[in-house]
Image (cartoon, rainbow, N blue to C red; front, side, top):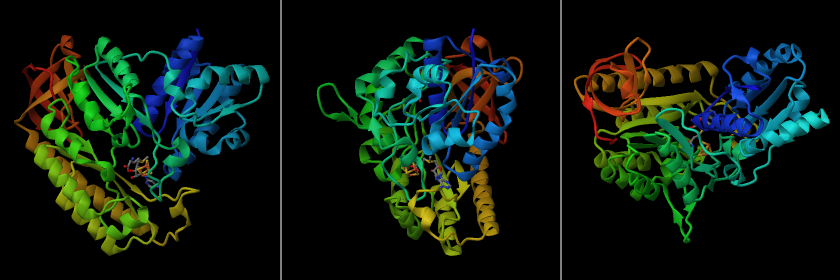
Length: 445
Ligand code: SAM
Ligand code: F3S
């Protein structure tokens, strides 16, 4: 039987796409996934180009696979994702060991590309954006445990001046509502109890409806909540400019929506937000958060930050630090600005010193860590409803995530995997919580 090894870089969208690559190749060629590259005949790299480092990693990774490829005739290497989309043919020219190059929107064509490369003995390249065709061509989703990701839209049309995503993944396209519902119904039949709706800009979802009109994210959440066996709904990533009243209200009215929100702000300085073309001001962002917390007082917030954007002054950075104090983020992903070729910001003079960027990043991360540790400590003594996802690291231990997206480990029998249980939090550790089983719970966020 043919074996497939996939290495995934980057975001959850890429994780999702990788699992779809595995599904497609299993359906077409019977490929089984392996975690051991030595046992594999086909190796796929699903790449990320959001920052320069991520992109460089791809080429050094490919360098390491040279020997793997020559060790056995017939071994095939494919590169997908954003680096593939950006480089196209040039990738196969630069890394001669590559046989397949495909973009995030053409992964469903992997079987044909594989055949083409075998037939022609030349690299097969397809990095087009054939709209939403991908989803029509994918096999039935396969559940792997009680939680699942479902991509509801692709691409991004925001064109923030620093970001490569609209160029590598194409513009926003929403999947029709009926297709999304059919995928989720199939996952629920297979025992899934929690769904994370995915999109680069998931709150831009406008799914065409069979009878005309379109369904936005707020409506979709309400529709999904009617599925009795679906206990919890999450979504990521959303854009602040598009976070409308209906979606804010959903936090007040829909208990199945988890009390966690990732809402990237990038900077607390209006000057920098303007240069980034984010489409909101610091005050507008903070106002959305205030209203979200009115709707759901215990909402845990996470965010993304870029430090050292061209011309970011001490004053701009202090504005970001002040925003963190006001917003009280539970966690964050933060990055040093990385110029991306072809984006408008890449033409700006990058005049912030590397040491300054590094210091700012460290200061920001330290403050967020303090907030995170404080929130974790506040959870001690509380009862949290978790969906038991898997065994924990130690014998007899189970693990699930709280509504606020923290891992909680506790002792319990395997039979509870796939069920919602109430757990008393007893201890806050650096990256997770410990607790004691209190009882089984009705489904709910
Ligand atoms: N859709 C999301 C939003 O609303 O902002 C962001 C998706 S983006 C792929 C993920 C994160 O990568 C961004 O939020 C940003 O913080 C970071 N990022 C994107 N381009 C970057 C760059 N050129 N340099 C550093 N970080 C970058
Ligand atoms: Fe990138 Fe901005 Fe879209 S960060 S993914 S262009 S919202």
